[in-house]
Amino acid sequence: MAAALLLIATAADADVIRLKNGDRITGTVVKRADATMVVATPYAGEVKINWAEIEGVDFDSPKPVLLQDSSRVAVSGLGPPAESTDTAFRPELDTVAFVNPTRAEYGDGIEYSGNAKVSGTYTRGNVDNDLLYGDGQLLGRAKDYRFSVFGQRSYGSNRTGRTASNATLRGDYDWFTGEKSFIYGRGSGEYDEFKDLRQRWIAGGGYGYRLIDTPDTQFSVQGGGDYVTEDYFTAADANYAALGWAVRYSQWLFDRRLQTFHEQDGYQALSARENTLVRTRTGLRIPLTGGFNVSLQLNLDWDSKPVTGRKSVDTVWLLGAGYAW
Image (cartoon, rainbow, N blue to C red; front, side):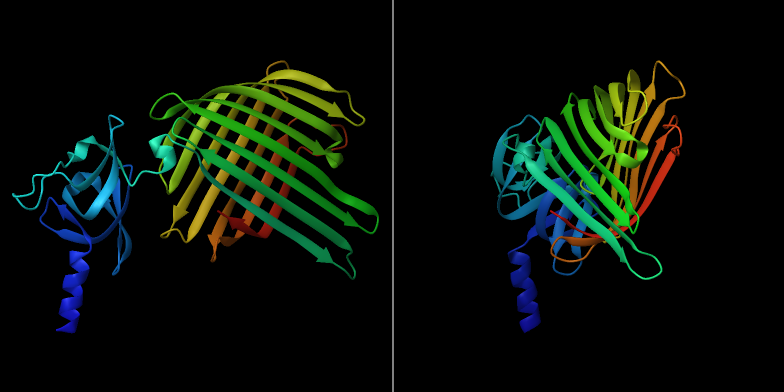
């Protein structure tokens, strides 16, 4: 009897999602994310329901809703009511843009997120070698635009001196021009002593498209023009225009227990066809607790026309600990 009373009380204080096939799901509506409704349940965690399969929703208390026409309302339900005596305003399902919208979805502010990672080695004995690598990224997203700032630094040494010394700083800004399209601007600065590179500055912009843009999957491609300025320690300096492209991909798997990611930036010189630069960052990130995580990452940089005596490809495998927010 006690268990039955508990179930009744729980159902009375829960949101109810009525499906077109007659089923009902009770829980707490978290949000509408693209074509799904996310519901937190005490028996199955977060459940994602196909928006097209929902007949109506009854909230246990009014919830904020943003409609397709940008109207903001607080309502006790969506779609046709379960009881014919309910005469309160209930938006039709196909007019709803967001349930429990964020400030960015409202257009009132910016949502921030980011991550930082550090990895290193300390070897003594027959081999004397140290390597420290760290990077961090800050991302911001508003209703009409998004931006990111990325920084990386690595330093290595052994008994004879330095074995690695490089740094990168990159910034991206995307202005949304349609449901999936955007115009972007980007810039980066790079230093790498063992590539003979005193500094390389790149700036450009172009057009991009968000192939997938959901809370679990981000996948976009972009292309345009860039201008590259290179200053070397010993080799001749270079300046040239280039065709540029980029790929940004991240995917949460296994109920957000594993995240995969891949980033690629490329530059093809217009004045010298053999001069091509490609930078990639690919890896896996496993969240632990409280925002902490472990990651496995491969950094691969390719310069088709390196300075004499240097190699075209640099690869670095990184096993590190990080924090995401």
